[in-house]
Length: 186
Image (cartoon, rainbow, N blue to C red; front, side, top):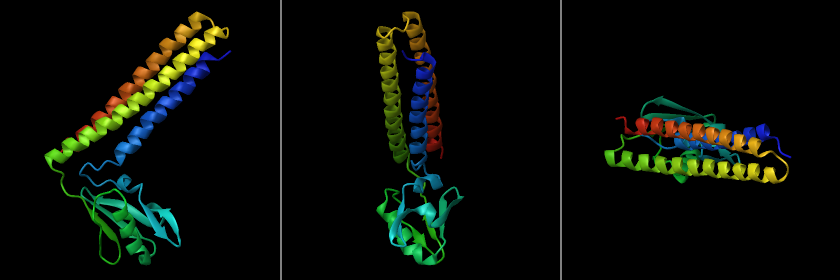
């Protein structure tokens, strides 16, 4: 027989992972403001192997429109530029011999609307994932009744599961609203 509290705890953890993943993905969406998280997915060929950009250089947003990348070894500048060009960042890097500079242009209104749509799509995927987790755990609770769990405990578990679901969906909506506001702010 299953422990309802442990089952609900497990469901909550999985749902929270979905919300956290959405937050990480949205951090990579370029909202016209320089954010070092945009470069998290950039790989650089260095010392004969592929490494994350932050393993070969110091990455920082020096102002709202500029990210500077200061390699620990100046010989890596060309490799860093190549890694950025090969990634989906969409910004052409400049270099001044000491560091790589990324300058972010102000996005147009049309581009901002596209970014909001892209974020909404990501948000909807996260919500679907949370709903699927809820459905899986609801099925587990229903099957547990056949294995000897009382129907009252099962129904209470389903109600608590629904409350957890609603809370996580609300968090996802808040995350999306924050990102949309960031994107639409000129």
